[in-house]
Image (tube, rainbow, N blue to C red; front, side, top):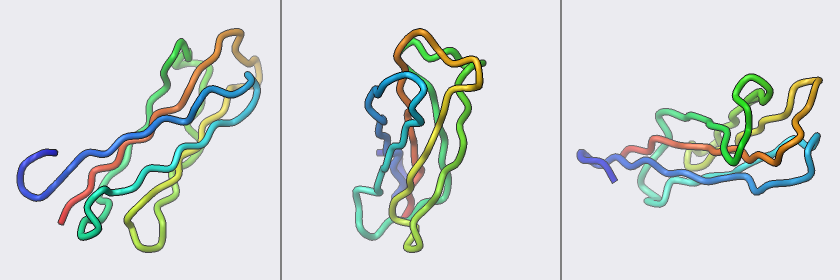
Length: 90
């Protein structure tokens, strides 16, 4: 939680077979809060130049979002996961 009625929420798309796009869904923990910003990251050995964040889709109510990422055309030999972060405010 950060001050001023705001929080940063995060979640991770679990590892799946390489070549499979990954999705994560994260929600604001406080029902009174709404999303004002998002961010993505690649973890667990994912190479930044071979994984492409494809999209972040906020829900209609702006209380949760879904993020997607995929490997580029050359793929990866190591497992990776996608992290999704939300900035939620009152």
